[in-house]
Image (cartoon, rainbow, N blue to C red; front, side):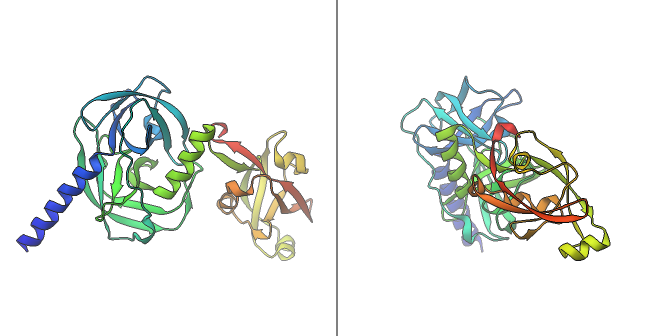
Length: 301
């Protein structure tokens, strides 16, 4: 047993040393530094909620030096921010796919809250499919960790026991719960931030709440509840399509809608510019309204 523990200990030490070469310190807020991971040459990804200003950001390098950085873009929905760093020769993390990760697997978090790297060993506590965060972003995997939240954790590099960079850690999406933002999400979001400075999201321009339908209407639409439109943004896709305050939406392209949480996942970026058919009840009559799905940038939310 002692030999097994020694091998594990030595392996974790080597893994930490190798991973730390791609982890930097990010000084972009008053409360203290966070961590960041080298995404590509000259680009660092970190947690958006830890970046309080857009320029004059200081990056603490693995060799003990420092470099200046500016924000290229941020996406609060996934809690990611991309920084352009004026420093050549940074070592990108060996990004991998956490698709085979499941509850119970060990994960090593490597952060840099100070000059030196810090390592924390934890477990995957929850492993689910793609999900939408409370802030409106889509993560390709729902991976939550049983791992202590220490200062500087957000923006840390999370690796598996094979040294694959699975993603970036954050404590900013679910209060008090460490979340792994997977590599696939990082690629999609950071590439968009570098190209456009923001992330586009599908947008109808309505506010809804779930309502119980009258018995007769329940029989007509085949469901007990639907979404009441209580706000409508002027000039939005929904307004242009003729949707009105007080309308009740029962389905989006045939997908039944009984509470607001069922609509949001259908508004993926791929839906921008496409036509959707809304099944709407208005004054007791059921009709179909065709809407061309619009877009919203992350700073509009």
